[in-house]
Length: 227
Length: 227
Figure (cartoon, one colour):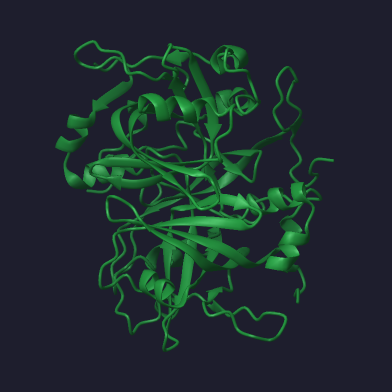
């Protein structure tokens, strides 16, 4: 079935692959993944965090993010925390601390703070009234946000799809262009290929809003923004 | 509220922003997005395709992908096609054709093939029995797959979250390392920042499976793979 330089596999071929090989391959198929740290706190105030590669944009008004969590087990501290108190944070991972962020995926005991264990710094957001948001973000992160859980959907394969409403955002102002866009190449935000391959981004261009019969405008300077 | 070089916005601040500015900002918050073309065919055989930046990995065995679609309207040809015949494809967008892929987001009439309109080539997958998969993929793409719809969930904000089971995959064999991983930097697969910023990926490293109390191993050569 395979033409030269192409490998073609059907569903039965995929099912017959060794488990680890299949996980490496299938995790490469969705394209590049976003790289965030989810931060939470337990009811008794213990902080926890873990890398997630499954954050997806769901809407801008209100600002909504979706996050896929594996089928929760006893050691899914972050999922249990956000399910209990309804709050979590997302913080972009940048090139300066991607190794520490990766290490948060190890199975630490619930009594251990992953922040302390890997050497990352909790950032506790305060609102205008001086009230503390009940989940820590990452001090090191160029773009971070706090969210409240608006839906917690059980997917057919046991995964959870958590939808969060953005309650606050906090970002490196120098990365923003005049039209609102954040240049994630300038912040050295990373993206993930497969399960474990980290990359920074190399700019191609920004393209104008697509219209039928109209040629695209191309913007190579990411600082500028559209009029 | 903002410290030097940080901009801090709460939910009310976000709601008060001009619509386009808010969309540009909030679309930047999830981190880098995957870049795929979804391909479909109508019941009477008309092909359609559109760029999507919302594909997320859901599972490896069986291989499952999730795709968020905006609240479907009359001109959401691809969503209506896949809801009707239960088949769609996903094809990675690479640097060689990202402008054509972006242009597929224009509002073409249902009678128009986006493939023809923007200059991309449909690839019709044939199974081992010589039967044609009922949705076209992209001939130009380094990594493409056909999926059957396993769930079509309505999200609270009107978006659809479509879960697809991978029926076949077809990829550039030279991008695969011995452990199954596909090097998406080598295929020049792009990632998207915000609504319209395209990037290729610059490799940092692959990191070993994280374990408590164990130092990470670092692999700079993406062709090698883990033992």
